[in-house]
Length: 144
Length: 433
Image (cartoon, rainbow over all chains, first blue to last red; front, side, top):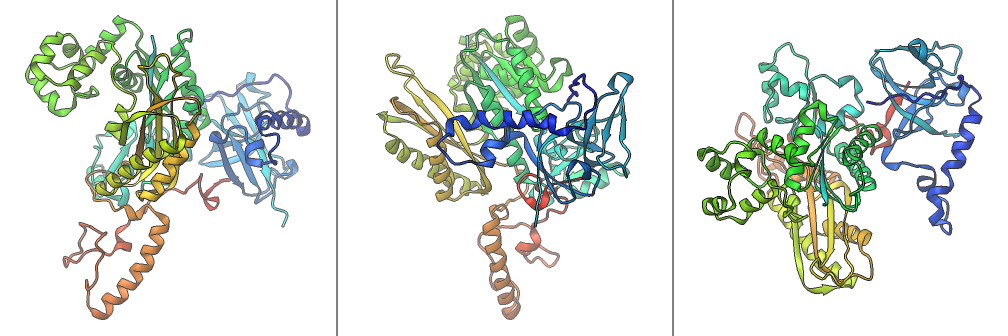
């Protein structure tokens, strides 16, 4: 069973800080041996191709995170989710994309937080049948 | 001592469906054969309910009224993609591996004498379960036959935490005593019946017999080899499991060969033989694997063995395709500087449910399109000139309608309950609310 790894830091909406070091980490390692080759998204950005899946965003619950209706989310199932990760979870018979907030894990619950004041966080109590399905590593946004 | 691990996906097709339907965990799920004919895969809950493999679909509702059973048509594209992901993770974690069916592989745990194998297996389970979402059972033992048995215990007893390691004689004996003889690799139904009549019911009864008794009773190399394997002596060649579960053509070269082009010509021959066999069985392959090895008896020369596989998104049995894919696989593993002695090609087909006549055309998208066009022409011909003026030789359907006429091709392929192709079609990717 998948367990949620906890980072003992507060929930942090400053997503930039979380993502920036990961991005840097994502680039060089797989690419090193291909330095002469041209850049390739699949090769250079997808760390775990065997664990990477895609999903299409429906609705506006994550707009303030810059994730809009119709965006394609790149989901890595091999990656451990942390507090503040954007994750895909299966709740109430559907897949949902939200921030993972494990701030209250000690108090017996975690939350899936939308990035839109119109929506309420989804509260998951200890003992609920719940799993983080995967961690969102990129979103692809069509501009036209 | 070198150990072997057998890695086996649990209820493979059902587990593939559940990756995208976590709500079905813990609930009875079945997958139907191609054409929605009968049950080919069952979840543990479905097995507990008493649903038997091969149950015709129409009988499910009669036999289990008022019971909720999730039913899926086979989605080979999805199963092919997800099992390939499982194999990729195995390959990453294994010094050497051989896939021998769509959902099983064994690993040669070479050079891992210092490694805690139980922890290695549990870690592999975790990586596959988390990274792909498919549960596997892992058996580890000094021989392939014992490892296969161990994987059975890993699957059926929760206490093993998905990985059963047989690393001493007590564990080996305990497992042998609980293992029915007809489940043992290399025994088969024919020998099992004879053994049963001789009062040998478990693998332990068999393993405890003397070598002389085995030889006198069977005089068969295969049986003796199984006996030796159960007693902890590794003697099943690496390509053997694939021969049982898949189509495998492997030979030793007349001499030793270092040149890739020369090896390619042998591989092409083996691959073409495989394609012929597929067509004969009226099945298609979804995976083409190739292995090469140097001569183990020439200890003075460098030793190298490897295996690689290539997946076919659209399964096929055409010689051209199979040969092309086999060549690709060879190129992945060929290394210069070695003298090769033996090579083989393994093609793995999907289990489509033996009882139902299958037609390979319904797997091949391109063929299927052509077929549909052809169908239109046939319909027109038959409409103008009377029913069954022209029928297809390749059809071979048993299905007849009430008037005894052959069912039309397009109508004969049923996949009413097919899940989306979540991983292979942009139109089918999951929706995130």
